[in-house]
Length: 374
Ligand SMILES: Cc1ncc(COP(=O)(O)O)c(C=O)c1O
Image 1 (cartoon, rainbow, N blue to C red):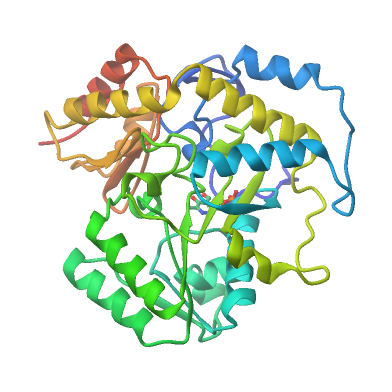
Image 2: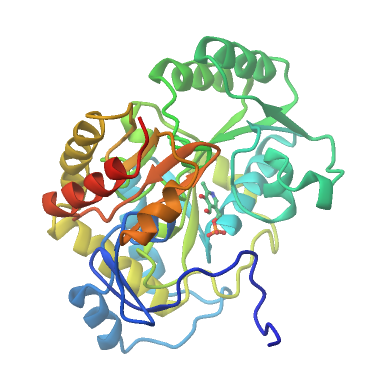
């Protein structure tokens, strides 16, 4: 049979529907979803309140980036208020575009060459996003020498390496997730981000925090950086911005830094903040606020971590959790028992819906425990 749509992996699940914390396959099997599309479905799948708002929408089909649209202002104001930053939003359709924007804004601001990121982390699949972390270098490289990739290790050493790299001058921006989901949910210490902040301030280097996966309550705060009491210069968001009900993203940049983008055609995204996507993001944020999903994420995350600690050493914040267990097939074994998780390089990760119930956590933990070898 020809493959009409490119797939990079053998499909193991044909999705027919989804509701709350569950995915229903074409053959009728129900899976407890502890991935939620990798930090996408924070609000939970198919919430009537959100789908009703989408159906009720009577606004324009489309607004060109060259016009104005009141709801852009309203969503921008709301997003900025949640970040507690003095910032301006740049419209995007998803995470990669948001990260590209953050890199562009940084470059327009200080005109420097180098970008610092963690090696093998993940910030998207555009050329710049791949070059940041060295992704697929053997296929798409060599990348330009503008990128400095730092290995993770003991935090004292990592902090020194990053700070020294920034202090060497000529660095345009440093970028990292606040809690590094894409390396298996690694939680850097507060002192790391404080030191990086200090070095960035000293050298006028831009500090970008990629919140594409960690944003919108995933870590028990609206944004992951809020766990550390630091203020980044730019954050990037997508995924949980709409909880998957529509494609939307943004770079939210310090107001002063944003000024550097005021030149002709510096940014144009045909579908960035398309009206229905804007309405959806609004409905998603309202739903999260009304249902206190950020508090729930914090409380349920503590419960999940405590339950996992009965047999392994979980790391994480809120409902963003990583752990090691001895089973190379943990992902498949869990799936065979009706639970969706992810696992790579010996590390398992869990990103449940923010309103996941205690019973669902218990059920998931039992499946993981049963399939973990001592
Ligand atoms: C931290 C992070 N940044 C950026 C991206 C890219 O986002 P998108 O797939 O929406 O382009 C991802 C996607 O998984 C991500 O996890």
